[in-house]
Image (tube, rainbow, N blue to C red; front, side):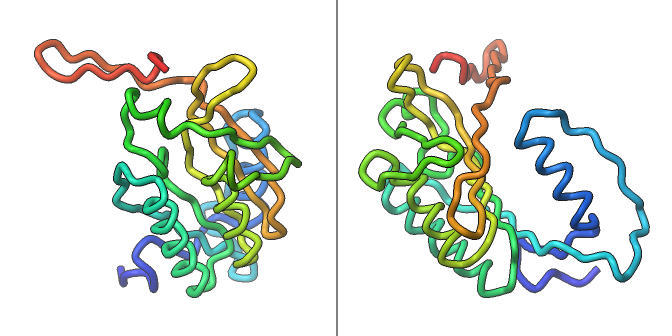
Length: 186
């Protein structure tokens, strides 16, 4: 198989309508099971999707800058949707989450760059490049409860937040004599 034109991009074999339905169901929390044809018609519209991988550091501003670069690179290649990784703005560490947590706006709300620099960046990027942007996740601070959530927002090409999801099943592992990590500690 030849390599795709961009390292983390491919033209999806999933018909756009099927992908959109499954994506909408996932965003709305209505499950993740769907069926599709394994040999779609050649005339079926395709969705160009980029999955971003990046080196995350303890410098939040630098992480945001790297995301801006990666999204711009993908948009230049003609993608219609970009998906960022989990915890792209901070180290993946429960001790880091409180320091990097920010207010994450909900559906239809605007992102204040002072309170929500990561959300504001992806809202701006989606609008600037006319793409859907799935915001991976960032640590969210909930002012009402004081809790920290691992939260993803989805932004439309118009720059509107059209989906927000707080991770429910947190990652906990305790390997005797090895690693212990409890995302649920946050």
